[in-house]
Image 1 (cartoon, rainbow, N blue to C red):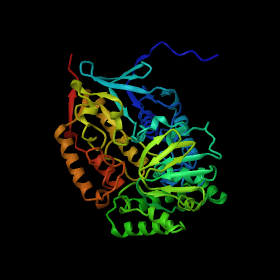
Image 2 (image 1 turned 60 degrees about the vertical axis):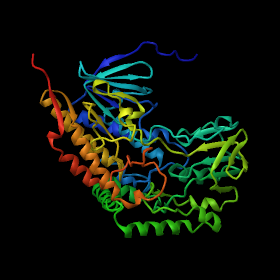
Image 3 (image 1 turned 135 degrees about the vertical axis):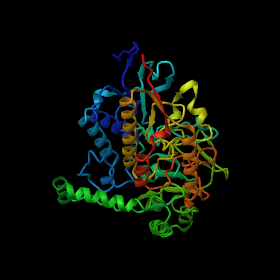
Image 4 (image 1 turned 180 degrees about the horizontal axis):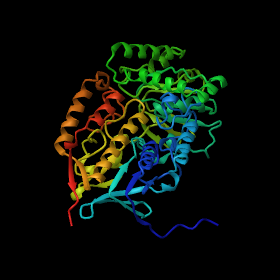
Length: 494
């Protein structure tokens, strides 16, 4: 008997609401509880916690940040099996975090948020789920991040394809790829990981590449049992490894060293040299400098193109027919299965949800020319709203950035409550000045301004995802924000 669908609607009021139970939502929840704030709910659209690591379970899915640096500073995992953790291991970590820190009673799974609106009269946020449940709180924390809305390119005839079709972020376990003819559209982060895995299984694999990417090698031999035991028994060793990774990553992510960029490109070309066919190798050689797009890591992507059952197609796709994909040269390649490795609508952030601020201000309209916020966390006219992993905060380890953002948010919550404020909003002039300065800093990162297509830019061409400095600078600046940067509205006295 099929389960009955719940018809009654919830309407509850809390002190705090969090949207998203990925890394940002988990970190925010942990820190709220640590500070003694227990009346909060985390709304999560998926059937489990973990965010992108819950959804992206395609074959070969792994982190491209070293494992020992991909855990929260307050809950360090010592015994990662290898230097770059698998999706399953990372998901296990976040599930363990949520359980260990008592977050599960606060989390509402399968609760996709449809809208969030600030009520000027009641001075609170009213969040409505797609099922019609309503949650209210004076303070709203958004942890929806960048990688939550799937991107599909507009291709004529897409709906006409007769075979199985799916996005890599919604991998279909019910589709057995054994012996199938598979067309993969896209050649970036997810394709680099799953293509080598499924190439061993399918009868033929056609990879449609728009632009070549830099794919560097990675030192990823599994840790020995002796090493793992050391990690478990000697926390100082893990702390030293984390610090070493941090010190290695910090100077690289600013892309201001020609020498480091040159070394990365040389590594990428050495990695590429395993491709035996010179024409294929030429197609896989990037035309843009390292860093212009998201750098990728893989030891087995390039060798895949030496397989007889794999073809790299650089001609653009003209249209799709029931039997397969037709390229600009008029050739039809018949396939049984089509997989989109085309990433996400990374520039939408929280505007993927219908968000209304004070006086009816719409976030998607405000961001029509590209998302921007004060240190990626606050938007003028949207009081008591704090975002994790918002505009221009992507760089280094996002967990480090999230911890900085949650710490900032807790400081503002403390101010709201200790001073008896109705609301706290960032000043428009302060936000404008900040974003003007950040864009000037971005203009100084030469590789980001080279001619390449990637997810960093909005439709207007403005880079809206990247933080142009290192992680230390972000933490330092967010700690030093002047209280006069905000409009503080006191509660009216009776």
